[in-house]
Each structure stands twice: as structure tokens, then as C-alpha cells.
Length: 101
Length: 101
DNA sequence: AGGCAGCATAACAGCATCGTGATACATCGT
DNA sequence: ACGATGTATCACGATGCTGTTATGCTGCCT
View 1: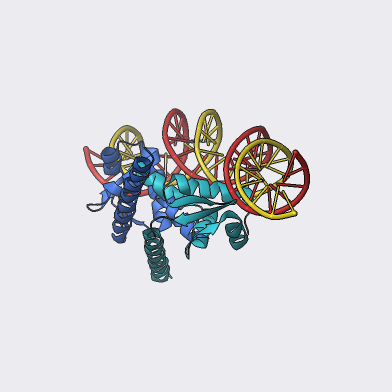
View 2: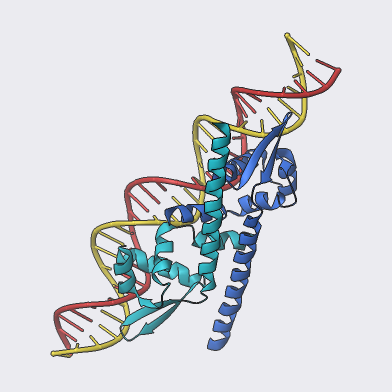
């Protein structure tokens, strides 16, 4: 329970999600992620470190570059399911609003 | 993306997950949730409010009691999938550790 | 009407997290 | 060996969240 909450926390940050999204189509090095997301280099580095510790992403140095790669692409399934639920929720809230008005 | 992160944040708190878990088997009133979780009444009330605003839970007063109910039980599917991923991650991390030692 | 149980809210302290700017570290090419 | 590029880390300010205690509010019962 404790651990599950911690795991969800990993995905509860817009910029972190953006970093993750940047890695959807394959490994990228830090600079590439920076360019893809428009975030500062320090911030990207921090988020990548977090994602690495969380076990979502894998770090592999290659020469002077450092590539990061999503370990288990099933995380995107999780994101997708959450998004679906979120949309259903929105719909429900609109219905509830309509029922009042 | 912004909204998705916000949605994940809902599930990123152990006590909030506990409250949600208490509602897994059907509607409960606040006091029942308090007893089920062992949390303070004020705290449970707060978390229930959050869950309500998030559209995860539905508030229905009944006499002097207030029952809360999970709107779409698919949220538990989401929790389950996250837990599964979390366990896979743990396994992977152990493997990575074993590969080093 | 008065009192009580159930629930919600306010105010506050404590703590964690985020983003930034500056700086350190490492690796490559010359 | 040195400079340059890529990456990581530090220190810090700012913000937001959590939990508690105390207090309000509502609806029921006698």
C-alpha cells in the first residue's frame, strides 16, 4: 500500500510524464530528452534519476552520452488505462452536472 | 498530460489508498471508514473530499449519515495493474542486482 | 427546545517536492 | 594536456501537501 502509493507518485508529475513520453519510441540520451521536452537539463537529469530509481527506466552510458530506455513498455499501458478512466470520470461529472441543471 | 499527472496524484497517498480500499466492497459512511482504516475522522473526511472532487467516489447523505461509494470500480483494475507492474519492477531490480554480484 | 452523534471545515506546523542557477565531473577530440 | 560537450549534483527559494487540534454545522432523538 505504502509502496503502491510511492509508485503512483512517480507518475504524478507532468514534467516527469513528459520525460517518460519522450522515451516512448526508444532510447534517447539526456540532451535529446531536453530538446524533446523543452525542460532544463538539470531538471531532466533529476527526473531521469527518479525514474531510474523507481525501476521504470534504465540508464546506459554510451561513450560520452548517456542513454535512457524504458524497461517495461507496459507502463504505457498503465498510463493509457489511467487516461481512459480519467476521461470516463470527466464524462460522468458532466452527466452529473447536466442532471442538476 | 497535466491532467493525467493530477489524476495519478490522487492515488499517490497511502492513507488515501487505504480509504479507497475500505470502499472496495461497497458504500460506507464516514465513521465506518474511520473504523476500517484507523485514521482520524478529520483526515478521512479530507481524503474523501478529495476523492469526490477527483470523481473517483460519490457522496450520498442518508439521514444523518453520509455514505461514500466508488463510482467506477475500474479504478481497482488500475490499482491492480500498477501493483503488477510494481512487482515486475521489483523482480527486475533483483535480477539486475544479481547480475552484478 | 436541548443535546448528541456524525461529518465538515479552519488554522496551523511540519515536511516533502519542484525548479533554478551554479558548479562539479567525466569523456571525447585536437 | 586542454578545451569543449554532455551529464550529474548542490544549495536554495518557493510552493504545496499532509496530519492534528479545535471548532462549526447538520439532522436526529427524547
